[in-house]
Length: 76
Image: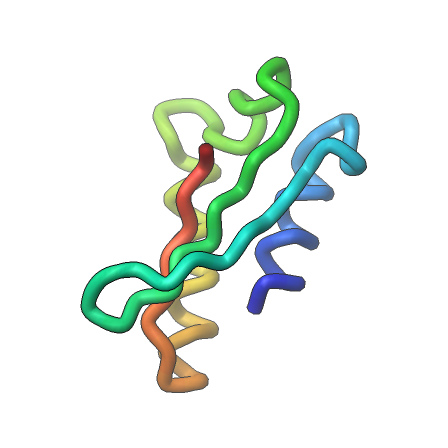
Protein backbone atom coordinates (compact mmCIF):
# COMPACT_ATOMS: atom_id res chain seq x y z
CA UNK A 1 0.00 0.00 0.00
CA UNK A 2 2.84 2.37 0.86
CA UNK A 3 4.36 1.65 -2.54
CA UNK A 4 1.10 2.62 -4.26
CA UNK A 5 0.95 5.96 -2.45
CA UNK A 6 4.60 6.62 -3.23
CA UNK A 7 4.12 5.69 -6.90
CA UNK A 8 1.18 8.07 -7.29
CA UNK A 9 2.90 10.94 -5.50
CA UNK A 10 6.19 10.56 -7.39
CA UNK A 11 4.40 10.71 -10.73
CA UNK A 12 2.54 13.91 -9.83
CA UNK A 13 5.55 16.09 -8.97
CA UNK A 14 8.53 17.32 -10.98
CA UNK A 15 11.13 16.24 -8.41
CA UNK A 16 10.28 12.63 -7.48
CA UNK A 17 13.33 12.29 -5.21
CA UNK A 18 11.83 14.85 -2.81
CA UNK A 19 8.77 12.69 -2.09
CA UNK A 20 8.72 10.76 1.18
CA UNK A 21 5.93 8.54 2.49
CA UNK A 22 5.64 7.49 6.12
CA UNK A 23 3.02 5.13 7.51
CA UNK A 24 1.67 5.97 10.94
CA UNK A 25 -0.86 4.06 13.03
CA UNK A 26 -3.86 6.27 13.61
CA UNK A 27 -6.92 6.07 15.82
CA UNK A 28 -9.61 3.41 15.33
CA UNK A 29 -7.25 1.02 13.53
CA UNK A 30 -6.52 3.37 10.63
CA UNK A 31 -3.17 3.44 8.90
CA UNK A 32 -2.30 6.98 7.87
CA UNK A 33 0.14 7.49 5.03
CA UNK A 34 1.82 10.89 5.41
CA UNK A 35 3.17 12.22 2.12
CA UNK A 36 5.74 14.99 2.22
CA UNK A 37 7.44 16.72 -0.68
CA UNK A 38 9.19 19.95 -1.59
CA UNK A 39 7.13 22.98 -0.50
CA UNK A 40 7.07 24.30 -4.07
CA UNK A 41 5.34 21.15 -5.34
CA UNK A 42 2.78 20.64 -2.61
CA UNK A 43 0.15 22.28 -4.81
CA UNK A 44 0.61 19.58 -7.43
CA UNK A 45 -0.19 16.89 -4.85
CA UNK A 46 -3.23 18.73 -3.55
CA UNK A 47 -4.57 19.83 -6.92
CA UNK A 48 -7.15 22.44 -7.75
CA UNK A 49 -9.67 22.63 -4.89
CA UNK A 50 -8.11 19.45 -3.47
CA UNK A 51 -9.35 17.22 -6.28
CA UNK A 52 -6.08 15.35 -6.75
CA UNK A 53 -5.75 14.68 -3.01
CA UNK A 54 -9.37 13.47 -2.82
CA UNK A 55 -8.83 11.15 -5.77
CA UNK A 56 -5.67 9.72 -4.23
CA UNK A 57 -7.47 9.14 -0.91
CA UNK A 58 -10.40 7.46 -2.64
CA UNK A 59 -8.12 5.17 -4.63
CA UNK A 60 -6.08 4.16 -1.59
CA UNK A 61 -9.22 3.60 0.52
CA UNK A 62 -10.77 1.35 -2.14
CA UNK A 63 -7.60 -0.75 -2.42
CA UNK A 64 -7.41 -0.92 1.37
CA UNK A 65 -11.04 -2.00 1.62
CA UNK A 66 -10.35 -4.90 -0.72
CA UNK A 67 -7.54 -5.97 1.60
CA UNK A 68 -9.65 -5.45 4.71
CA UNK A 69 -7.64 -2.45 5.95
CA UNK A 70 -8.61 1.07 6.95
CA UNK A 71 -6.26 3.55 5.33
CA UNK A 72 -6.10 7.23 4.52
CA UNK A 73 -3.60 9.68 3.02
CA UNK A 74 -2.48 13.00 4.47
CA UNK A 75 -0.28 15.53 2.73
CA UNK A 76 2.12 17.07 5.22
